[in-house]
Length: 286
Image (cartoon, rainbow, N blue to C red; front, side):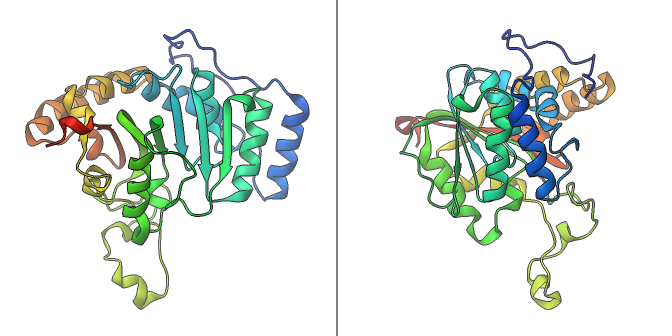
């Protein structure tokens, strides 16, 4: 896959992950084919490169330093984000409810040579994470919370909050927002704005996004919007490093000036939600 020339190198000096284990690469490709996935697809074999060019900048601008951090990737899928986190110097625990995705994630990490830095676990019920209280520095929720069954989402959010240490950060990126009529992953118009009771009448449950306030308030009272605290500087810097056009970046800057006065941030209003939530120290919670 050709690298985007507009993407700057990592300021931390970390190098982009490369496939180094050819045997694991061949097994990854075979396993992907067997599961009906195209190993050359951007969202399968090419996803590590995509995350390096996009999600990496969210991690590197996070107020909690990524190097040396203990990071939980919640909903790791094929492990692409975990590979990037490991390349940036994090110690990663990666969990997913899909056992087949977990098998591919292990092969993905192995072919990139970072399997020893990622603890990959199949967790069938994410309301019970096999992780001790307050032991995680950063939780990455990348395009995943909208796939959690809505009736258990509050319990899952509470479990994520339990394992995160005071002063730690939840990084929510790429989560489809119900504010918009078109669901970003499926591309379908309508279901986001339909109430859930309609599903019982039609006997089908279409893909929906998540309301921004469910993310802001669902992890508990001890969290605050870190983007608002730093006047969206980290958010805007990450977008700049991703190569966002000057025009669109200026629109986001203008939005930030207005929305922060209203106690919200631009990433809560875009079709794909992006927000950093800081878990306050217990003694600071009023």
